[in-house]
Length: 436
Image (spheres, helix red, strand yellow):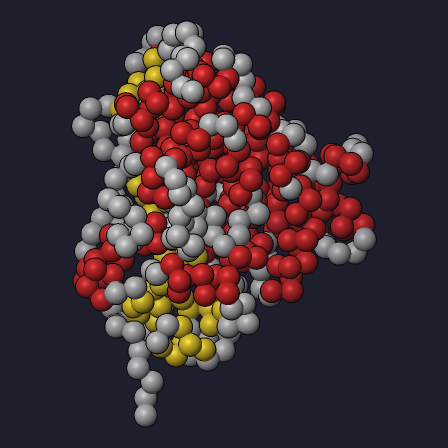
């Protein structure tokens, strides 16, 4: 007797919508939290339920794994080779993750706060100066440059400067670009990375610094990674770390610009806690409204809206048997907009995170993934995002262009496609005492 299968397979084109994410929502509304999609001659199982998502991402590592099909050199695999996102085996992923982890520990990230705060202050002041000539500023390019500056400090121990950093551009859209374009972009990035490796070889830094490049070079000296592996990991961190965090920050600012009461409450909190000084890492933990605004932006518009996995053997998921080799796509977008777990899921309401109980249902909020494969840059992304919002609210008031919708562009990740052009006006320096 043939095993029952989830509804499908469905062709996304039949379900319409501005992008695949809208089609996913239509599919779930009609057919439930587990459906089959048709992609060419193969199938993809779409997962949109928190319990099923946790089973795939966290609970059953012997049943579900990460990684591209053997020999796949398309999309992100062509851009990143064997880096963390596209490692050809779990063993390689585990080995390289262990090498990189010390640079991403929370104390190491928090130690960067003063430098990141200084860079953030410069960006916000630049917006205010520009406002005197042009009342509208597109915040996305500057947020992206700001995030790149912070990531370069972590990777190389120093910012490389805007011109040099532009040569390190690996947008997430490369995941759907022609292979020739992908390889050309990666070749340019490798040229800059090799220059940095040569510079570090000539002028080594103390081992205690523990930036990513230093850790990788030390591992190379021990025979634990080769030059190709170093380039793959650096390229992966550049692609995964810049556009995603920048999109989250720009989306959050744009959403706050369209929610003046929420923005005013966050600014009031910032004034009360900071009293005009730059925030420390500890201060960010005392800004629940700022944190809630950033988390709500991540919920509504997650920069990585899906997590691909593969069934490693015949196994049960919900009431269905998943055949070995089946590809699955855990839709973070669907989890974050599941009406069973979120009231008014399409509405920007940061208070849902600020009010008790603050912790969402397990598996319903996974902006950085979950389990062993959770994003290695989570702490840096959260620090940079909250720091941006806190310092922006401290110095400026933001307003969106009337009638300018906040758009999204979907490739491998989710990025703004309009609506990040904002009015940036200076705030008064008086400090509120209205909060307890």
